[in-house]
Image 1 (cartoon, rainbow, N blue to C red):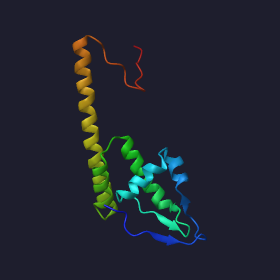
Image 2 (image 1 turned 180 degrees about the vertical axis):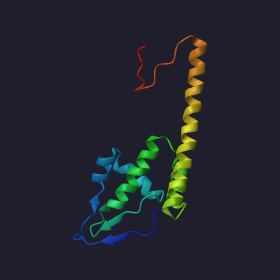
Image 3 (image 1 turned 30 degrees about the horizontal axis):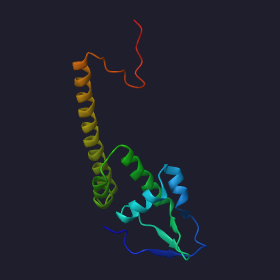
Image 4 (image 1 turned 90 degrees about the horizontal axis):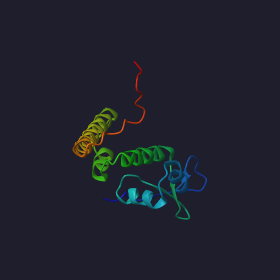
Length: 135
């Protein structure tokens, strides 16, 4: 998939951000952003000199993509989310389903790890943020 034809914007257009800023904001490399472009997840604009620029809406989409990747949501699922439903409600439902699927997979991993720990006689650690209540 490709991001489609590139649009050229003049250097005077307000509210566009160079590639470095969204990369810094999300903690990913410019290379990762170019990969997301190549997969059709983000459509960049181009200044006359050819530099990539992004609108605030595109930066929001980049943040969502990065967040989903950090949750280990497969890129193909993210593509389905981005290119799937055309309504806000439909996108929200698709996102909930993808996150529920990922949560189920993570729970299976936790269950498998607990089983392995139990077989070795080691107690699983307390989850982060779990406070013991004194009796």
